[in-house]
Image (cartoon, rainbow, N blue to C red; front, side):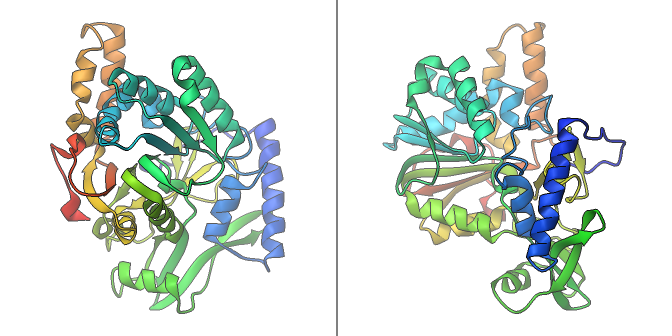
Length: 388
């Protein structure tokens, strides 16, 4: 989603007060750390700090009244198409589904209903969710949409030691705190945050030799001044999930690129942005605690992390190709008469999900599987694994 430069609605009332609490606590944290914190610590604080962070403070995040809308919020056809691929994996003998960061619970509710219709219900649908507020929304959504299946759903506080089934991450990896590295005039720096009057500002410190600089050396284009994100934490999560996966697959759906596109010589300032009231902001420090902060996903890095854990790349495709391969147009045709309001609304959502000008090409689907074989309808139309 491109950043925009248009007038924004300013926080007021409870939001403004919460913003002040976050800003005060953030400045105290920075001062306690000697006046500077690395960007990944900043991102972790403003998103996940208990009682303060964007995902931990109870405000509405998703849908028209929130700051952004994810694919599952647009239409149940998204979950119905995704269920086609998940059902194939579950029928291979794996029998559980683990969703990380289930948002409003809409995807879980719709997936349960769709898998039930396909005769491929998991024995357990586990949700790992860090936000107490979102857990409550998930409870309500599942109870409203799939009440007879709600007993199959459990909430986890930590990753299980063993996973036998499907791990689903829909727009999760983009919200894992990332590091910022810059090369300026041949010198390496780590970008972080310091206090600046009543606010905060980005500030670079020299980056010593080590793992983070080694990653930047491997991935950044040579010679030119360049700044971008690296996300060892996201890679570690995928590798940990892969090590725990006994049978089945990881499905990661997010916006991002293979490495050669992510670290393109012309993308000299990275991909970080903030989201507020359905606007994409170029400044990742805007209104700490009130904005979502995200970075695009390096899908090559995620694939490599899975391979290190003994998984194989089962497929990599644009969201459009994946949904079309899973029959989203067939499900759209079954919605009703083309002239009906219901069909028109569903068609508009599918168009947004699959159009190259909307979410169809920017969003990708990566599948990492344990074992050989299996059917992958989501990659039948196009598999871009060779581009990773």
